[in-house]
Length: 471
Ligand SMILES: [Zn+2]
Image 1 (tube, rainbow, N blue to C red):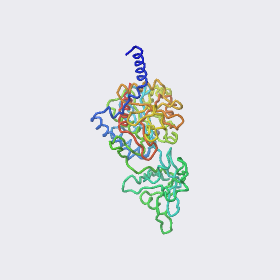
Image 2: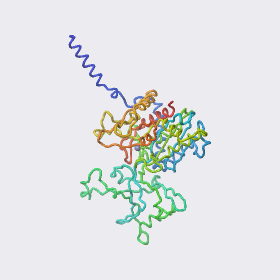
Image 3: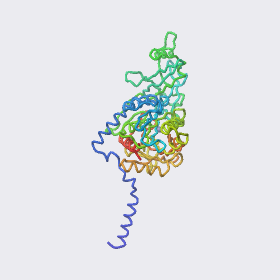
Image 4: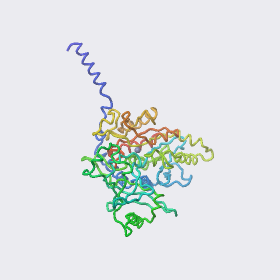
């Protein structure tokens, strides 16, 4: 081999080493576990699946999360004397949002570790005056909530749940369709035999919003009213009037159960994983902390993210600031002033945890491959550049936790100019907290059956546990 040829070979070798980015070497998380880990994963997913089955809306999720927390020794906050090192507390916000807290050994103005997630999911809501009759059917008028692709919600079994509040102060809980013995509701699509006038409709307008109404009955009473029959059926078990539906929150969600997906059972499919996946993991990681953490650890679970963080139960409300104030005041009794709450907020380290879109094997062109996240490759650090974003020093601090505990992770950025999505990160950042967006990738996001990798959920649990303990 002559010298010139050897130099040429070295040059080619150097180029090929450079082209081999560190990211190309990352492998599926399934390759780094043993059979003991697999049984931990299956065990953890069993609990997650049972939560998803019961938690179909923010109302049922709040109920379920509070029950889980109480079983682990958490109690609802009622007075400042409860705020002691090691205390396990629940701040319930109107039964639709909550903050679970493990008080640390340091006062909250020295630092805290908070994970925020939302447990509302895209769905269909019932209008205030829902009932009407058409062509021998009684139907419910609806209005959809959050970003749904409307065509995905037709011809599938749907359930009704929520609450009705009456003028005399009663709250009536409704849940019809989750139990396999219950009836379900349906939005009927047109048959292919007759739909030629509809076939030119565009992808986003396969159904118009006003075509998303639900069949609720067909039997008329003696006055030839199907509405009466439907109201009789509902009020015989639940005792309310048609006008009471104005002061109600009634939600339509898929009636199906969570299921294992894939012949290797590596995936879980269920409605509502955006973002009840992160909500469940934030709460269970907090419950599982064995020792009192140095810094107060908090799971902040909110409503209304899918409609822009609105309302007093959404992330734009002052509820979180209020809870920081309550804890800071209890810990600084005689010297307390508003600045101590502000200091506590600015010393907080926060993970805004939310699902993100994973690369889809059928539509890979909708992602920019190098910066897209993949199911089974661990939690994703989200980088946007154009809206809310963590600063680089906090991102480095988070990377250090992940790497020091050998937790697989990846990054996620949208393909430029293809769409996008928000989180609650910006809301907490506005309070002067240090915030980063991290989540797990899903397929079929915002559909009636979203898909997650079981191992990502387990690795998110490992990360959240370390984050709460981080000093
Ligand atoms: Zn989300």
